[in-house]
Amino acid sequence: MPGFVREHLRPLAGSAALHLLLIAVIGGMALRWTTTQPPVQLAIQGVVVDSKDLPRSVRENRAIREPHPEPAPQPLPQPVTPPPPDPAAEAREAERERAAERQKQADAEREAARERERAEAAAQDAKREQAAEKKAAAAKAAAEKASADKAAAEKAAKDKATRERAEQERVAKQQAADEARARAAREAEVQRALAAEEAEMAAAARAGVQDEYRALLSQAIERSWLKPPSARAGLACTLYVTQVPGGAVTDVRLGACNGDEAVRESIVNAVYRASPLPPPRDPRAFERRLEIVFRPKE
Image 1: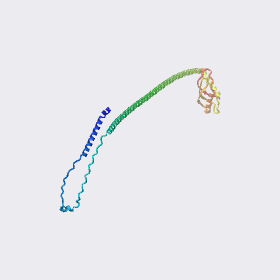
Image 2 (image 1 turned 90 degrees about the vertical axis):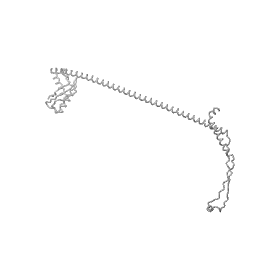
Image 3 (image 1 turned 30 degrees about the vertical axis):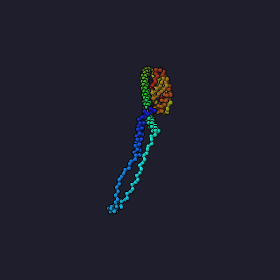
Image 4 (image 1 turned 120 degrees about the vertical axis):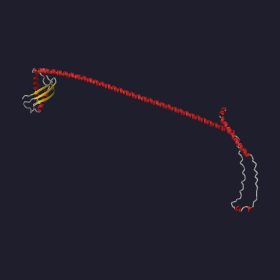
């Protein structure tokens, strides 16, 4: 209780002073109203005037009225005596003031609590926003890293494919070069063989074996020839025949020929029917490419 008095000393003192001032004002007014003032004695002197003595204009003025009687004096209102101070009412007033003060303090505390809650909510929002920003930054960094890794992997794969293609092209070029060299070597070998063969053929021709071989081939072709009705005496056709070892004919071309189309076709067919051609008596007389003049007998 003493602590409460010390805490609310100033409001209590002000309230007590206000009540004392109010009581003093009310008491002074009541004292003024209850004091009897002595009546004021008025001296009135009257003069009797005959109306005949008045001026004619005054007598004839019909606007003159008889004076109205003065109203009777009204009694003054009796002063209202204020009720004596009620200690219980003062206590209730003090209690209301204290309750209002407590309510004010409670309102202030609630407002402070709301302010703290708002501050805490703002801090939580800031933390959540910072966390979201960190998460977004981390996701962005991860996406950028994944994109960079993917780009690096694609570049590595592209470089590897480029190297593999270059290696394949190098190998292909090397193989082509090797094959070209081998083909050139084979061709050179064939040329050498042909040259040797031609040399042998020349030697055989000199010995008369070549002429014997061509005559043998011409006889074999003539035996296979189906003479058409349009064939005439003195027929002479040049044949270019290609054969392989063993006498199998692979190609026949007809050169100068004095026969008609049916004769020419029949001679070509006779060469294919004579395949395989007979071998020469001397193997050195064998020729892959033959030039034969076909002159059938009458």
